[in-house]
Length: 310
Image (cartoon, rainbow, N blue to C red; front, top):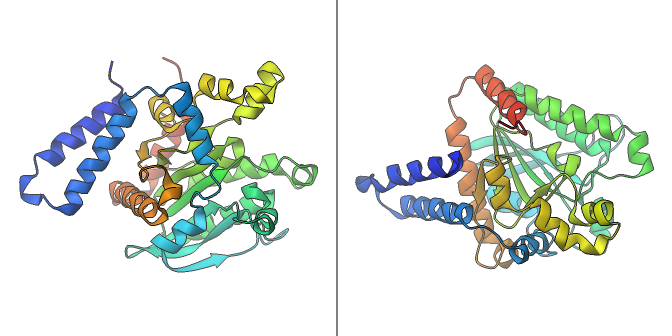
C-alpha cells in the first residue's frame, strides 16, 4: 500500500507535469527533485545502505550550519549568549536575509579542526546553547520573522556540568517555545540528528532531512551497547532501528527528503546548499499566508500525533 507521503508527492508531480506553459529550468529542477524523492521513498534501503548513511552523516567534510549560512544567507548577524550563563559555541544563532526575507537561523556547529571542535564541543550543546536558541526564536516571533533550524549533533552534551545547569529542562523548554511560535518554522536535519539534542530545535511546521542524514533517539553505538552490551554491533543496531531518511519519511517523522549531490553533500558544498535552499524556499512558500494561530494549532496537532498507532 502506498503511503500518504508518496501519494502527495505523486499528486504534486502530476500537477507540475501538466503546467506546460510554465516549463523552464526552475520547473524542470523541481520535477527532478520530486522524482528523486519518490525514488528514495520507494527503494527499501539495505543494511549496507543504512550504514552508509550513518557514515556520510558523520563525514568530517560534510557541510555544517555556517557553511550553509555563508552560501544561503545575506547580511547574517550572529547573536551570542543566553543572557544568563554564557555563550555556547555548539549552537549558532542569528538573523539573516534569505531570498529577500529576513529569517532567524539556529543550528548546531561541530567544527572543522581539533581546536574548533573542542571549542564547539563537537556540536553537543549545553543548556546555555538551547537558551540562546530560545532567545533567538522568541525575538523572531516578536518581529514576525520565520525560523529555520539546521540540526547536526550526536546529542545534547551528557556531562555532569550540563546536568547541573539544567540540560533536560532546557531541552523541554526549547521544544515548548517552538510549539508556541506563531511564525512559520522549518527544520532540516543536515547530518546527525541525535536524541533530545536534535529535537530541541526541530519542532517545526516542516521537518526536512537531507538524503544521507540520520535522525534517531539514540546513536547506533548507544543502542548496541544497551541491547548487546557491545558497541561494535552498531551496524546491526542501525539496520534494526533504521535512522536513515527514507525510513524516517515512511514513519512520518519528517515531511520531506532533501536530495544531495552525487556521492554526498561533502562532495560539493555549493550544490548541497543550492538543493537545501530550494527545499527551504518551497517549505516557506507553503506556509506563507497561513494565519499565525493556525500555524501553532497545526504544529501542535502534528507533533501530538507522532507515534500514535492505529
